[in-house]
Amino acid sequence: MEEKKFDVKSIIGFVLIFGILVFMMYQNQPSPEELEAQKKAEQEKVAEEKNNRKQNETLVTTSNDYVNTQALDSTQKVALQSKVGSFAYALTLPSSSEKQTVVETDVFELKFNNKGGQLSEVKLKNFVDYDSVPIYLIKDNNSAFNITFGTSDNRTLNTQDFPFEPTVTKSGENTVVSMKLKVSATDFLEFRYELKPNDYMIDFSIKSQGLSGVFNTSQPVSLDWKQKGIRHAKSISYENRYTRLTYMHDDGKVDKLSQTGDDDDTAEAVEWLSYRQFFFSSILVSNDSPFKKADLTSQNLVEDDEIDTLYTKLYTSKLPLAYNGGELNKNLGLYYGPTKADILKEYDKGLDQSIPFGWGIFGWINKIIFIPLFGFLIQYLPHGIAIILMTVLVKIMLSFVQYKQFLSQAKMKILKPELDAVREKYKDNKLKAQQETMAIQSRAGASPLSGCLPGLMQIPVFYALFQFFPTAFDLRQKSFLWADDLSSYDSILELPFSIPFYGSHVSLFPILAAVAIFFYMKMTTGQQVATQPTQEGMPDMGKMMKYMIYFSPLLMLVFFNNYASGLSLYYFISNLISIGIMLVIKNYIIDEDKVLAKIEVNKTKPKKQNKFQKKMAEMMEQAEAQKQAQQRGRKKK
Image (cartoon, rainbow, N blue to C red; front, side, top):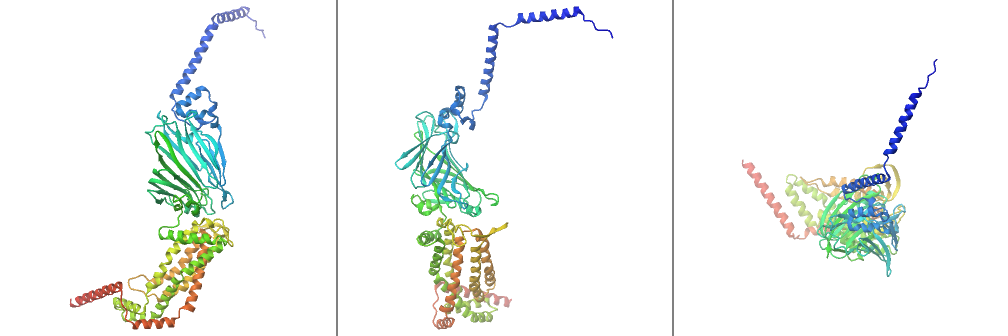
């Protein structure tokens, strides 16, 4: 193969061209002055682009604007000033990087979030829940306390977005926590909390100083308070039934939002509002003038008690605040503690009316009789024994009612053959049969109503106790026999499945109460069925009573399976005592022969009719005359 030969001329040409290029580049390079000018032009271009981006940004603050802001450089501080105005000062303070302030009293362990100046945790030291976990009313961001206000430079700001400067001092025995949102060293918005020894009420004030020129007083300022109720009881569905938003407004009127579904309302002149969580409450009180208005909502958070196990209800309140001379100055109270009547009464603001004792006469019976009586008994007796003794006293008090009922039943039983004969005699004339029946009953001093009316007298007591036991704080976590908590259900068996309306456990006290009710109704209602006449065109009361003998115990068995075991214990003991009283009255007090003899004597006496009886007799006679006239008219045709 022939070797390639290098072309010497070509090589020389390439070298010359390369040399010329190097010389030209050297000659055309910029001078030091030109390099400096070029660098400066590039820097100006970058600064201009950055400035354009800043001008195009919307003045909206985010949580990132409040993190470690005291370390910002001057450029960043200017940018922040353009976003939040005078309140940018608060973001430059060293305290803005601190997260929480912790304070403890005899009854509280409190944590204040320096961002927003609000309570971030409220722990009650003297109570635990069903699982021995301390009671928290505020924890894990379940509560928000925020003031929305306008500024003179047309901004709308929220206190929850800003860091407050905390200080903790002593005022005698009281502990004062001051949280200040500053616009300068001397001008600020302050949340002031004053904690007293052994007191669940916190004196809370919202005050501003030197902000009359910062606030936009023509724009409304509002206090927004939101809180989710934390589950504390064994049955969240039962607890949720007694979890409710209650408020006092319009000079002492007390109203409530729904205890079951979602609800909302707008009220005026609101003096206080209570976020009641069964046995514990968070209450906001206006210590000076009432809130002019309140927009309130309650949202049920328990749709499925197998899934929704953390929170019961979400409450929200929007309350307007008023400026005074361009400043804010509102004195409030914050109560975090047990929903216990004697404690709430101490504040003399009607806070105990947030407890559902029952309306009207039922509430009065509880307040005047059962609450003082039970409070007296538990001073000397275990709570279960106190319930039994109170039941005995109530039954003794109502024993005359049972006597009247049994006496009426005995009279109707004795008169039954005579009444049956009358109905048979006038079977073709029902109106005449009713007249004769009423006449016989009147002469004998016997009437079905005389047995019903005494029974109606027991209804107020029955309903009052139905309201008393679920709200009796003193029963909370008090054990008796197999029940470890008389304020909750007594479970003797956990089921591997859930039965609709019944639950996933078996409670024994409702079973015992259902059995006692069955035998009691069998002994009493059975006798009423035997003596109850059936009127034409009227419901068969005898058949209805037969159904009630089985329906009432079944209702007790199912409905009370998740109720307070103290209530089921009361009904069990009450029906046992009723059975005993009935047997004593029937066998040793009421003598049917003597009753019959008395009836015969009454028949011989002239019986004076009262106005009602006369009116009824006249109406029946008129109806009978009209009926006969109609019959004669039909015969003529």
